[in-house]
Amino acid sequence: MASYHSLNDLHAFITDVLTALGVPAGDADTTARRMLEADVRGMAAHGIFRLPQYVKRIEAGGYNLHPDIRAVRETPVSALIDGDNGLGQVVVTQATERAIAKAREHGLGWVGVRGSNHAGAAGVYASMGLEYDLIGVYLAVGSSNHLPAWGGLDPLLSTNPLAVAIPAGAEPPVVLDMATTVVSYGRIKLAAERGEKLPEGWMVDRRGEPLTDPRRSSEGFLLPIGGYKGYGLGVVIGMLAGVLNGAAFGSEVVDFTTDHRTPTNTGQSVFMMRPDLFRPLAEFQASMDERIRELRASTPMPGHPPVRLPGDQVPARAERARRDGIELSAATVAALRELGDRLGVRVPPSFQDG
Image (tube, rainbow, N blue to C red; front, side, top):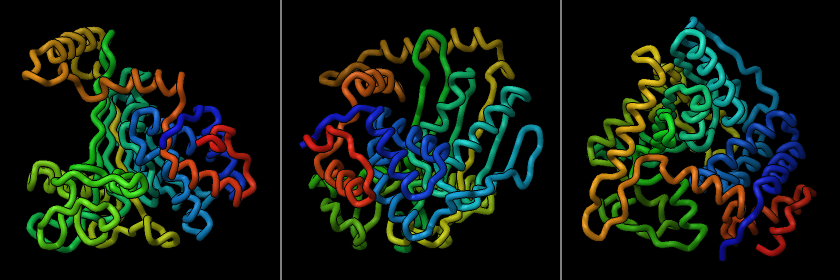
């Protein structure tokens, strides 16, 4: 049974857990913010649900808790960041902030990352430039391989996410946040925790037959979106976020869900751009508003809900989260309560009821 928990309580709990394990307070705060932003956006598989997994890696010595995050190559519009095996949310936040600064000053900024770790929901980082009216793009190599090359059997690819955030004027921004597989592997883990059955079309076994029991996920593969086209998209994202940056790709990827100690050398890329490189900002925003309204007002198919755009549900979800808190399953609450008790960290009162 699910229950709701306040954002403030969850933020305090995450930061307390991380600092109890030796994470500096500022980095713990950044990690908590990025995780809860995923929950607020409805990306529960990348939110506080991930905390026990991160703790396992911290306790195994798999993270550098005091990394020297630095640019190893840099121009006015680009940089390559070495994350020194730091917490993914911390490394990618710094990379995104650098891309934003370059775009605000020079019009655009592309920042690649190596030596990073799993950083959570892609849309969180693409959206960080929206308050400055920037277009944001985020690419990443997933942190475990669950997909073979098209027509193959060897798992050499991950979910390799893509996120694009485009500002508008009076209308909410358009924010696309997607894995290049039909569903993220985190969603499979969430289904297993909740005792849910997988829909056909999410995974297949090694004979190509539908796999619907998430507890058997290790016996099969995720499926790419759009067949071979999704496979191709995942490949080029992996090359731009992995190979280009000197980060892991293909057989080099470390499965951070099972190996809690080996550095993952995860790669991400962040691109930010000012729309006024192409047309005046106000003109662009007005045109975006017109096209958004046109799409949203288009006639839905019989029996279907009104047409939506990517990111349309985020404002309402954020308002509900601020008002009601974040919905967590009973299994997630139990795991977090056990974690807090083991580390001697005060758990939110709502965990006792959850």
